[in-house]
Amino acid sequence: MKLIFATAALTLCTTGAMAQGFTGGSVDLSYSGFANDDDREFDMAKFDAAGQFAITNEISFAGNLTVRNSDALGEAITGLFVHGIYNINPDVSLGLFAGQETTGFYDITTYGGEVAYVSGPVEGQAFIGSSDITGDTITIFGVAGSYGFGNGFSAIGSFERADANDTDVFANVLEIGAEYALENGAAFYASVGNAQFGFMGLTEDENFFRIGATFNFGPDGGTTFDRRSFTDAYPILGL
Image 1 (tube, rainbow, N blue to C red):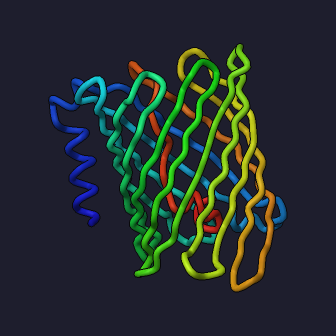
Image 2 (image 1 turned 45 degrees about the vertical axis):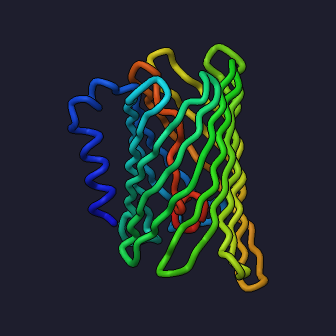
Image 3 (image 1 turned 30 degrees about the vertical axis):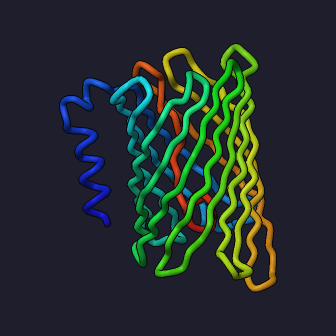
C-alpha cells in the first residue's frame, strides 16, 4: 500500500505532461495544544504540503504530505494522500481521496469522498470517509468553511468526527477562528476549539488552541481540497 501511494505521488511530481498542468500548491505550518495540558505533553507541531495538477479543465489530481509531531507520540506521524477531482462548474468540485498514515506503531489507511464550494466570499468543504486501523473500521466526517469580510480578514470554522462503528469510541472536534491573508499568498490564522472524546460510555471534553501560517501559490493560488487525515479527526493523535 505504501508503494502505491508513493508511486502515485512521484508520478505527479515527475511526469512532464502533469507538470505542465500545475495549477497550485500550498505549505502550512501550525502549532496547537490542549488548554489544560500543563506539561505541554500533547502540544502538536504540524507540517502540510500540497500540489495540484490539471489534466483537463474538469479533471485534476492532487497530492498531500502531512507530518505531525509531539512529545506524547514519541515519533512523528507521517501521511501521504492523493485526490482525484472533477470540477462540475467554477463553483462546485467533487473529489475522491485515499491515503495512508504511519504512526510508528501501525498504519492507518483512509479513503472517501469530498465536495467543495466557492462563491464570492464564501468557501465550504465537506467529506466523509473510512479509516482502517489494524482491522478496525472507523468512519470519519467533516465540514469546514470560511467567510471573507474584505481587506484580507476571514472567519473560519470546522467540525470533524471520528466514530468507531458498533462501539462507544468516538471523537468530535469543533473549531472556530480568524485568518488574515496577504496579497502574496501568505496567510496567518488563530483558532480555539473543543475536542470531545468518548470511550466505553465515558465522555471527556478538552479545549484547545491553534496558531499557524499558510502559503498558497500557483495559478489558482492553492488547491481545491484541504488535507484529509484520520489523525485530524481524532485529536489525541493529530490535533
